[in-house]
Image (cartoon, rainbow, N blue to C red):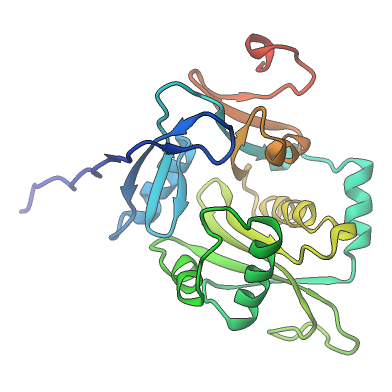
Length: 259
């Protein structure tokens, strides 16, 4: 009988680099590989511990002088949309959302490229090629899906792959306790639709339907305007040194932020 225990994951630390969110700060990350038969189990454990997945890597910030990056998860079963969110749902009532295996397409890449060129010209992903995109989608050892959001076309019905213009897409991990939004992008020319908000609302709906508690949104960076939208989806929990704690957006000051 083989009594050898399953190898534990090996963790590594990146070299310091400029922080993409806060000026004058330097970031470091701790990471490990998500491969093999235990990849899905490890992804669940690590995501619940504040890690994020990128391809077959799980990482989390390990900065020496800053703790601004905070893991956020929405409490899906308690969530109720605000009036403004209901308006977003109404504005996008002509969209069909369809879930597929994690497989890339040229249509997805075209939209992804347009999104990067408009929103993230100076970001670390700005020079991604079609091959880079394919690897981002396909290089996964966990239960990953891609959800396409298309404008409903007259007479298209609800066939397996609906017709209509592709407006947005989300790469999503299905976990034991919810959905993790790995990466999402949308047509930046359609600001009036608030497609980023709509995709999060759709993930909350999907999580509720699965009977699972959480939608993981990644990191919220206090002081970074581009991250402010994440705290709009209440109630939610933030990962603190004491574990996951309910976030109170009305509280003032770091010590009173959690309850």
